[in-house]
Amino acid sequence: MQFRFSDIESDKQYEYHSLSGSSYKGYENLGFSTADHIQPINTDLSVNIASPITLSASEHLKFRSYISDTNNNFYNELKIKRAIRQELLKSAKESVFEYGKTSLLQNKIESKIKEYGSLFIFELVNEIFLDEFKNPFIASGIILTLSHMDYSIVSPQGPTMALAALSNKDEEVVESGIRAFENWEEKDCLIFLESVTIKFDWLNCYLKDVILYLQEL
Amino acid sequence: MPFLVRKITLSKWKKSINEFGDDSISADAPTSCLRTTNNTLSFWIAETEQDIRRAAMAILASLDSISSLDYVVLDTGNIEALELAIEATPGDTLLAGADTLHRDLVNLDIQKLKIVSEMIRDTVKDDNHKRISVGEIKKMFKEACDKGDLDLKSLPTSIQDKVA
Image (tube, rainbow over all chains, first blue to last red; front, side, top):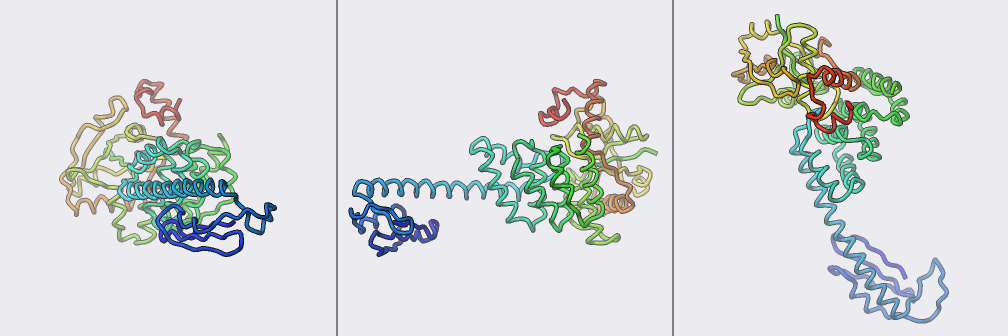
């Protein structure tokens, strides 16, 4: 048996392959009542990885319930994820970013971390950063915000984003990346920085100073 | 002649010079770095090199977290010659006794703000801006705490964690 989502958010199209190899495609809101059309078949119990598996009647019911729950959880998670992402992006756009000052975005990130945990929130921040990589205001603002937070909290996504910032075409974004590594004072980051060359001379000098500082820690 | 000290975001001005040349200024640099309130712009006054360091410390003690500080030092003689009015106002800093070092440029209109912007741009262009690194800032905080000019416990937690 194979089960596949093609797009949970738009059409809710799914494809269900029965044991016999015939398949059923359908569109519906949520849940899988259409799967009722496919009767469980109690025949060959030997399972070949490449071929569909057989379900008993009770297994079929359990499966339907499991898929329904999983589907609902997945869908709810997606909705929550989208809503938080939207909130974070809105805060970023409304923020006044200044080195040394707590921004609206930082307050938002910190409050969301308390609710959902840092891994989940920084995953979303990372997504926004990548989407807005060509927007210097948002990209540098995100790195500036992360640079004000503790390395143990923002790691591993924070240093990854800051490293990506060093390759940005915009001076402000590059500066934010260097500043982040300086602020975090994490010697382990030297391995990322020592091989980096920046096209802006003044920022290359700054990077060298930061590398020296981290080496001396 | 006293000097006026102000924090800047260096990349805004560097980018302005690189993209708009020496004779113009990007809109982003003054609108993000020189945000006015009631047509005033905040500065810290200094008479000597040591005072400039104290003014920088006053700025640092007004922030929420430690981050390297870029700042410019402008000559008040030049400012007064350009008919920009300076007024003493209480400064928002945790550094003891430094609130009296605060000055505002007052009655600023767009022309006067342009003059200030040009002064900052030229300072950056001539590499006369100054930077204090995170390492130095931590030392400055420690010294100020040791001297009793700063109360460590009154500082934001993120600064306390780095200084302690």
